[in-house]
Amino acid sequence: MGFFNKLKEGLSRTRQNLVQKVEQLVTGRQHIDEELYEELEEVLISADVGAEMALQMVEGLRKKVKEQKIGDPGELKRLLQEEIVELLGQETAVVDISKKPTVVLVVGVNGVGKTTTIAKLAHRWKSEGRKVLLAAGDTFRAAAIDQLEIWGQRVGVDVIRHQEGSDPGAVAYDAAQAAISRGADILLVDTAGRLHNKNHLMNELSKVGRVLDRALPGAPHEILLVLDATTGQNAVTQARLFGEAVGVTGLVLTKLDGTAKGGVILAIQGELNVPVKFIGIGEAMDDLRIFEPQQFAKALFGQEEAE
Amino acid sequence: MAMFESLAEKLQSTFKKLRGKGKVSEADVAEAMREVRMALLAADVNLKVVKDFVAKVKERAIGQEVLDSLTPGQQVVKVVHEELVALMGGTSSKISQSQKPPTVIMLVGLQGAGKTTSVSKLALYLRKQGRRPLMAACDVYRPAAVKQLQVLGNQLDIPVFSMGTGVSPVDIARGAMENAVATGRDTLLLDTAGRLHINEELMDELKEIKKVVKPHEILLVVDAMTGQDAVNVAEAFHGQLGLDGVVLTKLDGDARGGAALSVKAVTGCPIKFVGLGEKAEALEPFHPDRMASRILGMGDVLTLIEKA
Ligand SMILES: Nc1nc2c(ncn2[C@@H]2O[C@H](COP(=O)(O)OP(=O)(O)OP(=O)(O)O)[C@@H](O)[C@H]2O)c(=O)[nH]1
Ligand SMILES: Nc1nc2c(ncn2[C@@H]2O[C@H](COP(=O)(O)OP(=O)(O)OP(=O)(O)O)[C@@H](O)[C@H]2O)c(=O)[nH]1
Ligand SMILES: [Mg+2]
Ligand SMILES: [Mg+2]
Image (tube, rainbow over all chains, first blue to last red; front, side, top):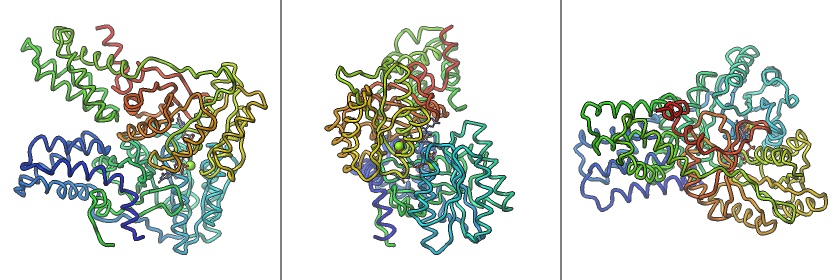
């Protein structure tokens, strides 16, 4: 199955809902009127875009309709799609793995899919022939280390681990040294899930970042914030506060294989402008895709597109 | 958060403008309702639920009790709060107890919602009430899920039944039942794997477990940060399994937790417990009034209103 089909498959629910709704809205209508705008706004809100952002986007639509002198309600779908792409950016944001080793720190609130995403990334880069190392930086949650260890075995990469309850900074330091001495290309550092409103835990995270920098100046090179697509407006605060604590360089949106639409990333883009780099569409190690804004917006609206 | 601490203020100023006019019109109320709508949506209350809710509040707000008052802004907030509490139902953190032990409690939900953690929290909670719980590791899919429950069981000194990951969850549930009876455990808590509500195969598995162990309580574990999709999830789990209650987790965060309202509206099931941290002690009975204040983001404002 090609990339686009797989992505579409993963997003089929999202697409169905949104497309059907938009289509229901526009079919049989002769004019673009207030009611139609209002209903479009509701479609966006239902996708977790957020009331404020939805309002803004519909404002944007209104302006375009006026400027382009559009009268056909059917055109609204294309316009909305354009607007989404505008928000998300045209370019595919990639993780630069040219440094050796490249250190990737993975952060986020509890249960969003950090550890699984690390396994998926390890699998991806290992399949490309890179030497990957994992650091079991979640020393807090019950059996978190074992979970990463099992993933390491499945993917076929080594895991640097300490005991449960030990200092995550120490694990990170050791792992960075190991990555250097073993000639690893990429080091992926797992962290314990933490809620962004807990200062002591956020400080602990900043410390892990500083320790990595001490072990390997410039590290971590990439800081990925994992967001669960099921999350509502709280994701905006998550993005802001994790950004302030560690300087997030990219987002990973997981669990897009459900019916959640992950529209909150639009609200996040509106406020913070951190690119989405990957999406998770399942629990297996190959259920990770590079986030492509164009295709994402198109898949969201069910347009056919060649590879 | 800050955005909504201002709901009361916004309503206040909406109505203040009118004070001079002496009479509050329907258009003024409509304006106030828009603010209420925005606040609820920002708290992730489902859009449909919001619409019904706002219609109801509007009816009351147009009534005399609000318009004739000296502080219509505060009165609207009060009405909104009261209606929210009513919608969430009374408190009911009771876990049924079977005449014929063991009482079986099954936790279900999406991936990462907090099922395993909540199983151990509930086990501790029930033990404090004098029960003798057994926890069963029925998640054979997530790496180290069994180990996770075992570690938690060890920490709490509560036994965990497991058969590894090579056995079907249905068989594990059956085995756990037998084990509970044999070892004189009066309460059996089943940890199940996270699953999507649209995954038919895995939903069938839950139905199968239900058939075999006939749980007295099936609790849906819901992350307080969940957005608009909460209704779809709750609807599907309720439709397929018939839920008895909800555990709302991660309320120690700053999410306003509107999902609670959505889930309650869809399933009619009471929210029985809330999770307030990662530790085993961090479980509390649900308080509808606190939740209503939280959804509105205005705990302290309410005390003001009470005085008004
Ligand atoms: N359906 C689906 N499930 C996912 C996806 N990514 C992760 N999961 C599941 O979500 C659950 C939590 O994943 P983890 O990787 O353990 O999440 P985490 O962020 O490391 O969790 P903590 O370390 O406890 O904070 C697991 O059951 C995963 O299998 C995804 O893209 N789709
Ligand atoms: N802060 C906080 N974290 C919680 C709470 N409940 C659970 N967690 C955390 O959320 C993450 C996921 O919890 P689990 O109990 O593993 O979730 P689960 O539903 O069993 O996950 P799967 O089995 O993968 O579907 C872990 O990091 C828990 O420590 C809570 O009330 N507050
Ligand atoms: Mg983890
Ligand atoms: Mg679990």
